[in-house]
Length: 558
Image (cartoon, rainbow, N blue to C red):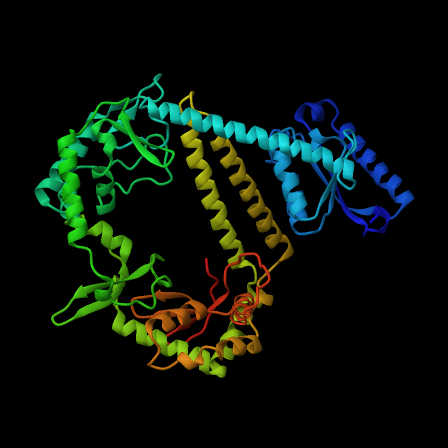
């Protein structure tokens, strides 16, 4: 098919000048680039219906060393939204000076059906020759990436075989040695705590009692991780943190690493804190406890609401657990994170109300509301009316808050990588960390652009509210299970299909039923055996149903 027979292009002009260029000629370079690009479009349109310029994106006074450019991110978002299908620049360096960045952008463009033209280099992917040149560039970039990856892996393997520390979070009890990358020294203050941990488990016999003894006797598990780490430590000993220490063979002066799926051990470039005999003895205690207290599945109680139940006060998950009563097991839902931390403390710190809800009270209550939601059209209709009213009054607030949370999460990840980069030994390549930081920054820029659009254009989720016909078509498949004969698997499936979240308060239960059109349409397609069309992942719309006063409201899942 010839170009003349194709649909006209939706064209974006991308223009960039560096800080130096802007200082020397504040307007000339930008104006010259735009004039050249517009003349090129006019020339092509004089021969056939080439296309129309839909947008001009100008990054003034910004380097092309990376993709952290506001207008470039807006352009990439427009390509993903199918608003642009041809990008034109005066020369390749205006778009990127980094081969890898350019190849990533070109991969994304091809995925979304967008072409690329550079006037100076005569790269024009609207014809076969131009695309061939770009394919050659892609092959070279891929070769470079694989070579770099192989060099980094070989370097890490060689360092591990010498017993050197390869970066990352330094084991508690050790510290980095300035000027000696890969070598660790004993942090005497922390090492006393490590030795005390090995003594405590031998005396107390189990992890929870040993952790409690350490906390009661003033042993501190330092919150900050030297060398970086995704999360700070809790500051106290828990069962999990104590187990990680007791199982870490690095404390015996041994470096463990994997080569060709085989775990190897060599003498480490740091002194031992614990002798090999003590480490083996503690390992036997842990192995015995693990096998001795493991419960069989048939003795566990089923929990139909696990995964959707949260505390209304702290918004943490409440999971199903059990305790032994006078005659039988008693099931309940409680704060798992608080129980784990408090189990290692004599004086309990982490207490939130409601701390524990009996399963025999909560599950029948929720089940009755599910039955009403699925079988009473009046209740469903009233809930949808309230949801629509809410989104008419305040359509974008929840979407904005959701995106803000995502941006904060990405910023936290970037901060962690920056800290790790600052402490990375000079002999270890920082390229993988830079690469990850660039990806996170690009993702953050995308979210910031979405946030800007929500604030300026008033985009909302009103149109995603399910219609009664769609809901009825889906609900009728499951009404056969709304009786007391439904087994645990069937009830769990119903909860997953109709409930987004259950909030437990001191004297109230809020059940957030899913009212998202996309959710039910995809589920209907799966039930019919068809492959559902791909829909970008979104938070499910939901409306909450309070069991105490039967009032209605709305809440988006965050």
